[in-house]
Image (cartoon, rainbow, N blue to C red; front, side):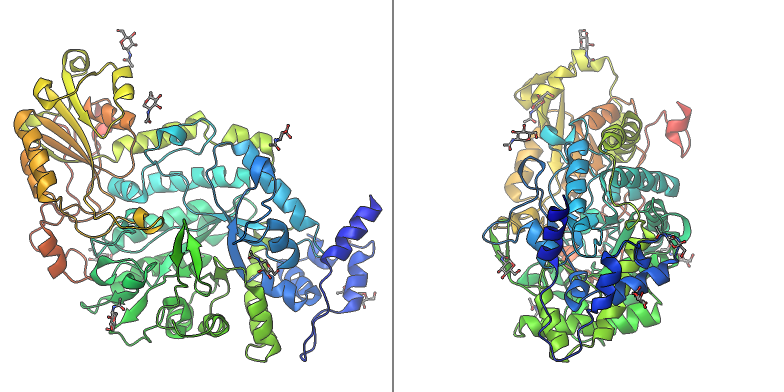
Length: 636
Ligand SMILES: *[C@@H]1O[C@H](CO)[C@@H](O)[C@H](O)[C@H]1NC(C)=O
Ligand SMILES: *[C@@H]1O[C@H](CO)[C@@H](O)[C@H](O)[C@H]1NC(C)=O
Ligand SMILES: *[C@@H]1O[C@H](CO)[C@@H](O)[C@H](O)[C@H]1NC(C)=O
Ligand SMILES: *[C@@H]1O[C@H](CO)[C@@H](O)[C@H](O)[C@H]1NC(C)=O
Ligand SMILES: *[C@@H]1O[C@H](CO)[C@@H](O)[C@H](O)[C@H]1NC(C)=O
Ligand SMILES: *[C@@H]1O[C@H](CO)[C@@H](O)[C@H](O)[C@H]1NC(C)=O
Ligand SMILES: *[C@@H]1O[C@H](CO)[C@@H](O)[C@H](O)[C@H]1NC(C)=O
Ligand SMILES: *[C@@H]1O[C@H](CO)[C@@H](O)[C@H](O)[C@H]1NC(C)=O
């Protein structure tokens, strides 16, 4: 046992620093640590500032800069640590050699208990390092419904809610708070302590592929809701503690105004533009987030064009990160960059150059220096601590500057209680994640978020008994599932009494394994698709469910279909419950629905509600005739 511990200690002791600057590693500190007394940073009776200072004084430069990187943590097979591939280092290397302690956990969580066990294994690997700095594990959103019947409904996974646009459609701050508190519980119990969200960008450019994870087009509504979101994850008024999940508000200073609606993951979409001189509008939700106690911020990939700011990516941009975010808006928390700003990489088989927009010709070292000088604390999607060691050794960045960021990052871990107990209880994970109550609330929100855009002759809701007598033609739904709900399904519109069509908002398919996931380009259906739909509309009364991950330009669907429902991540069951009036739709549009692509192209990227003569305005949403008052569902 002792031999084992000593071997581990020896294995992880850093190699001597070959630097001209004085190494921060002091032998007597190590002596204190390996003696029987508990070092101050491990002693919870000391205040956090003392614990942070003590730990910092014990850290080598390599151990410090390891904190400044956050990259993906891939679970290995059968609950083991990932042993790496030709393109990525093993978990053991990342934790043991690179001294990294911040990771975003990737992969589906279909078995909460197994995930909790895996998280404990990774935490144990971190506990076995020289200083035993615990891991902070983060996650992209995991609570939003995706139409993947294979995993989406599997017991043990998280409760399933509509996308944030659907929460915005319900305009209910209390519901957002409830959602965030439930999501926090489900994160906490599997050991996820940082949320790489909320995304508070304003959807002022209808073509942008990422507006499906925003709160819509209106700054006030977004601000009101994200304050509840942040408090629900972090705790009331920024009182972060051992039951908190720290949030990363993104993407500063608002990623909505993308030039021509393209996305800045990609070379052709690197520009962000302000033809309406309307940057201030995009800052409104960030100001609200800071006031609510937001702990972390992420700048976007884009570079600003035609503004007073230097045209380089926002994380490289001192005027944005230091002057605007830290000094003007008073943000004191952690700034973490978006993923992959330094190193060229491959994502889902697609070559992706580093997103160093405006600095494409600089070296990796120069990029890293620019990011630190801009005022960022942590590099997302990178594992290159050696670059920062070199910058310090060459005297290009001071160790004091490194300490400023590392102190912020360590402080967050202490506040979250990770030093006092980084482990989770797998049995509790199995009980809490996806419990009936959480699932029920998520399902209810999926139904209520439906937005009734049109309802000719009050065709909706259909009479419940109609389900056995009526013949349905369906598209976009699982026929087996529909039959199991006792719907009589026929194969042509001609045989049907009613058609049910689930349509994805129009987009232009893009090539590439990664890029293909981004719905970009035209918001209109092609002439061929319009003709195909028109022949269904003229054959049989048609009820359309349009998935509004972007504001579709579909006046002809509104015209031709008997009823149109907009949705933002809701399952087939939710759809049927709404169609048969078991739950009434309560959503209101979180953005305008434009009339045409021409109107979209003529509008300014940074200005909300700017397309000419929209088909429906922000806030449009009908109720069923028998629903009474604004709170229809309360009074059936
Ligand atoms: C380590 O121990 C020495 C002697 O006991 C003491 O002077 C020093 O302050 C200690 N260092 C830390 C970091 O606790
Ligand atoms: C923690 O610090 C307190 C006060 O300084 C001391 O009394 C206590 O023994 C320490 N605990 C451990 C486990 O070393
Ligand atoms: C996975 O783990 C289980 C339980 O520890 C073990 O029985 C099984 O052999 C393992 N499978 C593989 C492929 O390693
Ligand atoms: C793994 O990390 C080492 C340094 O620790 C580096 O030399 C090597 O290139 C890395 N390998 C991969 C696949 O990233
Ligand atoms: C947003 O809120 C501010 C302050 O309450 C108000 O002056 C403004 O008119 C609101 N704007 C919108 C679009 O509701
Ligand atoms: C971005 O803006 C610059 C400066 O106006 C322009 O030269 C360039 O063509 C634009 N588009 C891209 C993809 O860089
Ligand atoms: C369709 O639904 C049935 C019943 O719910 C299910 O067994 C089947 O896997 C689903 N098919 C697809 C392609 O999702
Ligand atoms: C479908 O109909 C059968 C036979 O009438 C009935 O037993 C079953 O409960 C119905 N299922 C649903 C989901 O309504």
